[in-house]
Image 1 (cartoon, rainbow, N blue to C red):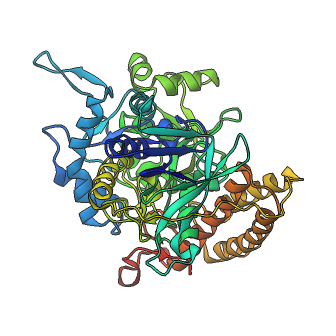
Image 2: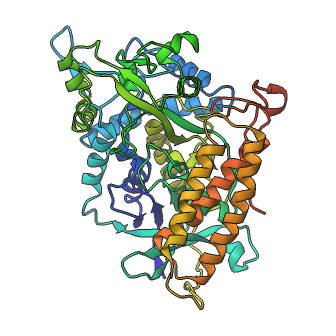
Length: 530
């Protein structure tokens, strides 16, 4: 057993920000199942929404967030995160984060602010079209060789250790975690009174996603098995514009392209968004994604097109260098040709239910970033609010954990007992179940839903869950097996939450209940394992 003052699972903007602050107070273990830089944060293109200009106000940002959230945002959460944002951005800038700037009339430079769907003002700070990668670079430079931070790469959390499972007669608390060392196959026991989930989302639960391969919903599954409350998992955001190309996987075409004047065209080259919403291409993501889905189904086309050729070529190349180069390698010159795009699973608006300090319902457990459900996003996330939430909640979670950390109680945590297991004999079983879950979710639990499709998904997922559990108990665990176990758990939570919401709201749209029902469903969908 190894003891730390803080254990952080995940290495994106939330996890690394928390780790750097916590290292001021004690020892920190950062557990990440791939390399330290492999996170959802690194894939973020658009930027961080934050009030920084004289033309913008906190009230405007709050109003935009509440409107996008379709009535389910917690206004106290929105106000806290929006108003505390500038101080956290200042800290990130002080670490060396570079945001794009442009010349001001007085000869100085000012922040080059982008605008995305649902925003009434330009307020998105960005670094070209690779903001997340620049954030990761900044934070990793601070973490590197930090004397109080131990980085455990290629280690995957298996399960939390709780006093309830250990049989202690006290309030159920999280007191540690079992972690698989992928290199050796051994499971280590980490002991801590402050366990922080910062594992990102669950995009890989769907067949088509903008997320990296690491996004398998591990944090939500870990918290669920430990007994923490989960909320609003029916609200999975589909990004309207993922590159449609047979040789390119999961490449996002940033919403900022539409913010800078890009227009959506159908297969015959005609604009169509004005038929769906007066804000056209700048409508909130759920509206744009459903509009594209409807156009594709109506015409039978495999994609639609995003056209930015109306802007000067030099502007497009300098503002979107990563998108330009990636598309060019695929034979698409975006300064001359429209980009073929389709919707894809993008962001998990629900997650582990927490307060504004990141505290979960289970004592000793915090959740920050995309894995958490703070109430900021409601039924639909406003573009570029997520990185801001990660920064603010990391700070608040650190402040709360440092302020209220109780004296450490000695626990003799048991070692991991593998039992009578053998090596996995047929990897094809894991890969087949993995593909079945993702196809099932895409076909039955996608942008548009029905009760019949959801019931079919629930029935098959119950059978898959039993198969995966049998596999888990009979074979030596691997990262692939653990990801499959987490994937089927999270898929089931998405379906169960969707079945319980008999209305259409935000990202949850069902043909059986096409209108919102404020009388019954103006509330979070919460679930807890009993």
